Length: 87
Image (cartoon, rainbow, N blue to C red; front, side, top):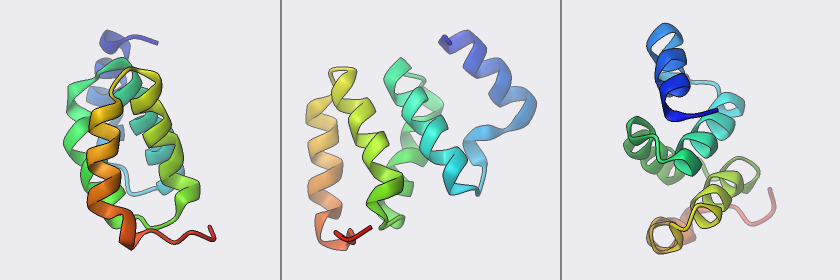
């Protein structure tokens, strides 16, 4: 996968704007890892609204794995008290 392919898929299917949390979890993670800019704002909004760690842990892991640890920490710190620790 690369940014050009992600862009093509997104243009054809509008994946970035999906409402399905299973798809968001995977799409945003991949996009953040590849530095696909169109997912950054929706991903940040989503981790601020989705309280289940099951869905958002991969998003944070992708940021860390791609060298964006500071951004991951900023997003996490802004939302920490909102997250449900049991799911």
